[in-house]
Image (cartoon, rainbow, N blue to C red; front, side, top):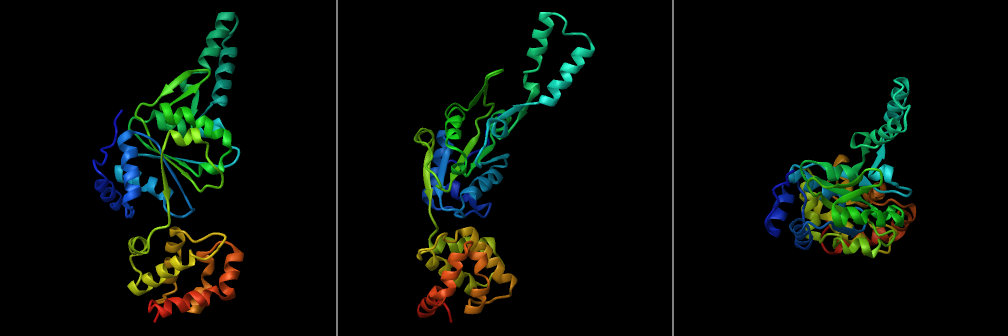
Length: 307
């Protein structure tokens, strides 16, 4: 039952994440430091692709501790998130007892029923696994907004008490409290009672300078001129009224695509042909191809970003 060696300052958090090539701004680093120091879950909201999930992955790697990821979706239940009983094994135990004629009396049946609901009969899912690790893991509850609202209420005991109550067995408390990171893309509002149990941080799109640092780290083979042009273009694109603005993940994907095409700079033809890497909705692509693409490139040329 141990806890990983945690950073002792905000600067140490920034340095720690940098070892995993995660460029963290000071506000986010402060929120994470306080979450670690106060042993409170960290609730991250923001647009898709801004690095919320990657933060949990980077933290797990940097601390050399296990990452337990619960990917949320509509219809999640306890059996998929916390635990379920090993029905197949329970049936085997019943058949063995019947074959041995060991369930003849009321006492035998009571002992058999008790043996069917022990810790050995549990199949642990991510939430319960997070409480039973000998060393504090990073528990990532990813895209909570995709789950049904009642799931918010189920999480309250886990987040507030680091425990899960199993009706047939009792309370299972954390051996070593997990480091919990919850993410949401805000497709629905998360219940206030859950948010109160967490430290909250909105993860915004990065500044131009920080996004450029991210691209340099994630795509080390990119030409300096191309990386500047890509980031300037994406930053300008986010000011448009698009259905889904490109996130940092799309910036990295687009840069990798341009490098794969041996592009040395942005030009209208190359941007036109690769918009599907950067944008994920046809309406947004059609809008760019309808005139906004030329407008953005002209703006960058006027600012001497393009030559």
